[in-house]
Image (cartoon, rainbow, N blue to C red; front, top):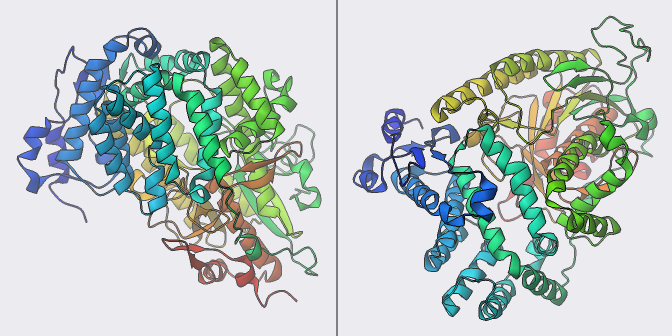
Length: 638
């Protein structure tokens, strides 16, 4: 419900302050002032309502963190006042926002050596989780650090007494954790502890944080200050990494939980189902290697690969689909172009991507070992180039992986890629007003093309949110409030373009991934996940045991859930990589819709949508509606 006084109250909160050495330029009113009027506290009803703050850095992040950490003190104090003002002065129902603010507070407490406050904040964070297993997994390393500091009277991670206490307290923290729930996260944490080096930390600071801060004129938001404190914490944790890896490894060795797979029995394979009707499936993504899919690829009979627009539809060489370059301008080819610097090392780069994914999942593969060795050997000045290559490779593989899931077990599928692209750089390119207008034209052209080609279902494993747009404007819009206003307006332009394009094609079903930020898609405003139309399904992610994943976003717009964790998928060239995310759960629903139409092509979008929803079953603690191919297709297969 909208509260009429919310906007004016929030406006009154935004005041210009001088804190410390003028580090905070814009902030909330002091917490004490807000506390005096608890009954009229403004309600934070969406992400754009959160008051913005700006801080002036006295130097670049790498210098502050590695050379003059004492300069972080006034920034920490300013952030503390800022966060407390919001937490104490506003009514915040959104759990993800409270979680973010409390994480800021935890970093403040750890950075300031306030161990009791750190433990109290961890308890506040744990109170936001639903199950005992999730509560135990929250900030367990930070809790062990704080308890060790209290026990020894020092926060010096290089002190042998502290290290012994940390080993003991971390062991105690892990003893109460459920490995069947947290095993993957623990394995990922162990692997991370094994590869983090001073060179990697410096490389990340100098290669990523410094350029972004400089692009903003060293005037940054509260999120950047929290990141600075977190990175200083990483520096202080370095002596503990061998202990962390050892203790986690010992805990994992104690318990090998049985893998529960309730998902596979829900799947159906139509390979032997007899006569099927071909179904065109749009893969609106970052590019698809159609060479992997044989006759399961859509073909434009009126076009040839000759550098001309043979059919006069405005696209050149669109034999199997269309592509757009960064900036939403038409391009050629349905697989993302690979720059020469990546072509020269493409095979190894793909192995490293697989290794990074395997390491994150805690898998002991040859590729994970290669990734660890490569990371350990990097010099500081090599780090950012390596990370940018991984980002480019992530875009390169993404669309092919979603296409692989969408076509699995269905020989009637005809994959139709619509490729988008984005520039990969240290400082993100801004989503500005001109870009939004270009996006509008791109959306119309893409959806019209899919419709003209006869696509019945379109998979969209991507999202754009207002925070993403706002962050992208940081390098071009110095005023925080103006930046927020612009981001909201730009989002509206882009979101309206999508909604109108979908609504104009009621005979097509669009399937969107919810997102992987564990946040409410309505609160942050996310497209296409937050669009509600009768021809759109938004999909969250569960694991093989049909439990909600720790990453899936949520909200009233989420219609169904599907397996999105550790999904083996082919990537360009044919390498199989296990991937996680709602990017992997959305094509499971696309796959099911395509199977329905392959068996009964006369069904309408409304009928197919209802079949998927009606046959989803309530699973997990929440419970969540999880799709079932077997239940939905029961009686349709001979």
